[in-house]
Length: 207
Image (cartoon, one colour):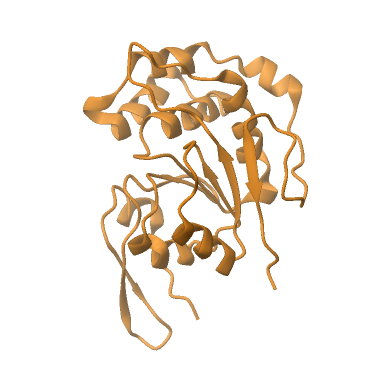
Protein backbone atom coordinates (compact mmCIF):
# COMPACT_ATOMS: atom_id res chain seq x y z
CA UNK A 1 0.00 0.00 0.00
CA UNK A 2 1.24 3.49 -0.87
CA UNK A 3 2.10 5.66 2.10
CA UNK A 4 0.48 9.10 2.15
CA UNK A 5 1.95 12.29 3.62
CA UNK A 6 -0.26 13.78 6.29
CA UNK A 7 -0.45 17.30 4.80
CA UNK A 8 0.38 18.13 1.17
CA UNK A 9 -0.47 21.84 1.33
CA UNK A 10 1.75 22.77 4.27
CA UNK A 11 4.42 20.15 4.78
CA UNK A 12 5.45 19.95 1.12
CA UNK A 13 5.07 23.51 -0.10
CA UNK A 14 8.20 24.92 -1.69
CA UNK A 15 9.70 21.52 -2.52
CA UNK A 16 10.56 20.55 1.07
CA UNK A 17 10.78 16.78 1.72
CA UNK A 18 7.78 15.10 3.33
CA UNK A 19 7.96 12.20 5.78
CA UNK A 20 5.18 9.62 5.48
CA UNK A 21 4.49 6.51 7.54
CA UNK A 22 3.39 3.18 6.08
CA UNK A 23 0.79 0.92 7.69
CA UNK A 24 3.68 -1.04 9.18
CA UNK A 25 5.14 2.03 10.87
CA UNK A 26 8.02 2.49 8.42
CA UNK A 27 8.96 6.10 7.70
CA UNK A 28 9.51 7.07 4.07
CA UNK A 29 10.93 10.33 2.68
CA UNK A 30 9.16 11.92 -0.30
CA UNK A 31 10.47 14.87 -2.29
CA UNK A 32 7.81 17.06 -3.94
CA UNK A 33 8.54 19.04 -7.12
CA UNK A 34 9.82 22.61 -6.97
CA UNK A 35 7.16 25.12 -5.91
CA UNK A 36 4.64 22.38 -5.11
CA UNK A 37 1.44 23.44 -3.36
CA UNK A 38 -2.23 22.56 -3.13
CA UNK A 39 -4.47 24.94 -5.09
CA UNK A 40 -7.87 23.43 -4.35
CA UNK A 41 -9.41 20.07 -3.52
CA UNK A 42 -7.72 17.57 -5.81
CA UNK A 43 -5.77 20.32 -7.59
CA UNK A 44 -2.03 20.96 -7.26
CA UNK A 45 0.67 23.14 -8.83
CA UNK A 46 4.42 22.81 -9.18
CA UNK A 47 7.51 23.18 -11.32
CA UNK A 48 8.52 20.45 -13.78
CA UNK A 49 8.58 17.08 -11.97
CA UNK A 50 11.90 15.24 -11.90
CA UNK A 51 12.43 11.52 -11.35
CA UNK A 52 13.20 12.17 -7.67
CA UNK A 53 9.64 13.49 -7.30
CA UNK A 54 7.83 10.46 -8.71
CA UNK A 55 7.44 8.76 -5.33
CA UNK A 56 5.74 11.83 -3.90
CA UNK A 57 3.50 12.28 -6.94
CA UNK A 58 2.42 8.66 -6.66
CA UNK A 59 0.97 9.41 -3.22
CA UNK A 60 -1.34 12.03 -4.77
CA UNK A 61 -3.05 9.34 -6.90
CA UNK A 62 -3.18 11.74 -9.81
CA UNK A 63 -5.66 11.23 -12.61
CA UNK A 64 -4.21 13.94 -14.86
CA UNK A 65 -1.20 16.19 -15.41
CA UNK A 66 -1.50 19.53 -17.22
CA UNK A 67 1.83 20.69 -18.66
CA UNK A 68 2.21 24.25 -19.95
CA UNK A 69 5.62 23.76 -21.62
CA UNK A 70 5.92 23.35 -25.42
CA UNK A 71 8.92 21.01 -25.37
CA UNK A 72 8.44 17.23 -25.89
CA UNK A 73 7.61 15.56 -22.59
CA UNK A 74 10.61 13.59 -21.22
CA UNK A 75 10.43 9.84 -21.78
CA UNK A 76 11.02 9.11 -18.07
CA UNK A 77 8.01 11.26 -17.18
CA UNK A 78 5.88 9.63 -19.89
CA UNK A 79 6.78 6.21 -18.54
CA UNK A 80 5.76 7.29 -15.02
CA UNK A 81 2.40 8.48 -16.37
CA UNK A 82 1.90 5.24 -18.30
CA UNK A 83 2.70 3.08 -15.28
CA UNK A 84 0.21 4.99 -13.13
CA UNK A 85 -2.57 5.47 -15.70
CA UNK A 86 -2.24 9.27 -15.60
CA UNK A 87 -3.51 11.33 -18.53
CA UNK A 88 -1.29 14.11 -19.89
CA UNK A 89 -2.72 17.38 -21.21
CA UNK A 90 -0.01 19.50 -22.81
CA UNK A 91 -0.63 23.13 -23.74
CA UNK A 92 2.51 24.56 -25.30
CA UNK A 93 3.06 28.13 -24.10
CA UNK A 94 6.43 29.73 -24.85
CA UNK A 95 8.17 31.23 -21.83
CA UNK A 96 9.34 34.59 -23.17
CA UNK A 97 10.73 37.24 -20.87
CA UNK A 98 9.47 40.80 -20.75
CA UNK A 99 9.07 42.90 -22.82
CA UNK A 100 8.44 40.07 -25.32
CA UNK A 101 6.08 38.04 -23.12
CA UNK A 102 2.93 37.05 -24.99
CA UNK A 103 0.32 35.08 -23.07
CA UNK A 104 -2.15 33.33 -25.42
CA UNK A 105 -5.58 33.88 -23.90
CA UNK A 106 -7.25 31.14 -25.98
CA UNK A 107 -4.76 28.58 -24.69
CA UNK A 108 -5.24 29.68 -21.09
CA UNK A 109 -9.01 29.31 -21.54
CA UNK A 110 -8.66 25.78 -22.90
CA UNK A 111 -6.30 24.87 -20.05
CA UNK A 112 -8.83 26.21 -17.55
CA UNK A 113 -11.54 23.99 -19.04
CA UNK A 114 -9.37 20.97 -18.20
CA UNK A 115 -8.74 22.32 -14.69
CA UNK A 116 -12.43 23.02 -14.04
CA UNK A 117 -13.59 19.57 -15.16
CA UNK A 118 -13.58 17.66 -11.86
CA UNK A 119 -13.39 14.36 -13.77
CA UNK A 120 -9.74 15.20 -14.49
CA UNK A 121 -8.88 15.44 -10.79
CA UNK A 122 -6.71 14.84 -8.88
CA UNK A 123 -4.73 17.03 -11.30
CA UNK A 124 -1.27 18.62 -11.25
CA UNK A 125 -0.62 21.86 -13.17
CA UNK A 126 3.02 22.55 -13.96
CA UNK A 127 5.40 24.51 -16.17
CA UNK A 128 9.20 24.75 -15.91
CA UNK A 129 9.49 26.49 -12.53
CA UNK A 130 5.86 26.70 -11.43
CA UNK A 131 6.00 30.49 -11.51
CA UNK A 132 4.77 32.37 -14.59
CA UNK A 133 2.68 30.12 -16.85
CA UNK A 134 1.33 28.14 -13.91
CA UNK A 135 0.79 31.40 -12.02
CA UNK A 136 -1.31 32.80 -14.88
CA UNK A 137 -3.55 29.72 -15.02
CA UNK A 138 -4.01 29.67 -11.24
CA UNK A 139 -4.54 33.44 -11.15
CA UNK A 140 -7.32 33.22 -13.76
CA UNK A 141 -8.83 30.33 -11.82
CA UNK A 142 -8.87 32.52 -8.71
CA UNK A 143 -10.78 35.18 -10.64
CA UNK A 144 -13.38 32.55 -11.51
CA UNK A 145 -13.48 31.71 -7.80
CA UNK A 146 -14.14 35.40 -7.08
CA UNK A 147 -10.92 36.11 -5.22
CA UNK A 148 -10.06 39.81 -4.96
CA UNK A 149 -7.11 40.96 -7.10
CA UNK A 150 -5.00 41.76 -4.05
CA UNK A 151 -5.17 38.13 -2.88
CA UNK A 152 -4.61 36.81 -6.41
CA UNK A 153 -1.48 38.90 -6.87
CA UNK A 154 -0.20 38.03 -3.40
CA UNK A 155 -0.42 34.34 -4.32
CA UNK A 156 1.19 34.93 -7.72
CA UNK A 157 4.12 36.83 -6.16
CA UNK A 158 4.60 34.20 -3.45
CA UNK A 159 5.64 31.71 -6.16
CA UNK A 160 7.21 34.10 -8.69
CA UNK A 161 9.11 36.03 -5.98
CA UNK A 162 11.77 38.27 -7.54
CA UNK A 163 10.80 36.95 -11.00
CA UNK A 164 7.26 38.40 -10.82
CA UNK A 165 6.17 39.89 -14.14
CA UNK A 166 3.96 42.94 -14.64
CA UNK A 167 2.69 41.39 -17.91
CA UNK A 168 1.42 38.28 -16.08
CA UNK A 169 -0.43 40.33 -13.50
CA UNK A 170 -1.89 42.62 -16.15
CA UNK A 171 -3.09 39.54 -18.09
CA UNK A 172 -4.78 38.11 -14.99
CA UNK A 173 -6.40 41.46 -14.21
CA UNK A 174 -7.81 41.76 -17.73
CA UNK A 175 -8.88 38.12 -18.09
CA UNK A 176 -12.57 37.95 -19.07
CA UNK A 177 -14.23 35.63 -16.54
CA UNK A 178 -17.70 36.48 -17.85
CA UNK A 179 -16.85 35.11 -21.28
CA UNK A 180 -15.29 32.04 -19.67
CA UNK A 181 -18.42 31.30 -17.65
CA UNK A 182 -20.63 31.88 -20.69
CA UNK A 183 -18.62 29.37 -22.69
CA UNK A 184 -19.08 26.66 -20.04
CA UNK A 185 -16.87 23.64 -19.43
CA UNK A 186 -16.36 21.14 -22.22
CA UNK A 187 -16.23 17.50 -21.19
CA UNK A 188 -12.96 15.86 -22.11
CA UNK A 189 -13.40 12.50 -23.78
CA UNK A 190 -11.25 9.40 -23.64
CA UNK A 191 -9.52 9.66 -27.03
CA UNK A 192 -5.80 10.37 -27.43
CA UNK A 193 -6.54 13.53 -29.44
CA UNK A 194 -8.34 16.60 -28.21
CA UNK A 195 -10.15 19.26 -30.22
CA UNK A 196 -8.78 22.07 -28.04
CA UNK A 197 -6.42 24.39 -29.86
CA UNK A 198 -2.72 23.84 -29.16
CA UNK A 199 -3.41 20.90 -26.86
CA UNK A 200 -1.89 17.41 -27.01
CA UNK A 201 -3.60 14.72 -24.95
CA UNK A 202 -2.06 11.38 -24.02
CA UNK A 203 -3.83 8.77 -21.96
CA UNK A 204 -3.38 5.09 -21.18
CA UNK A 205 -5.56 2.25 -20.03
CA UNK A 206 -5.58 1.79 -16.26
CA UNK A 207 -5.31 -1.98 -16.67
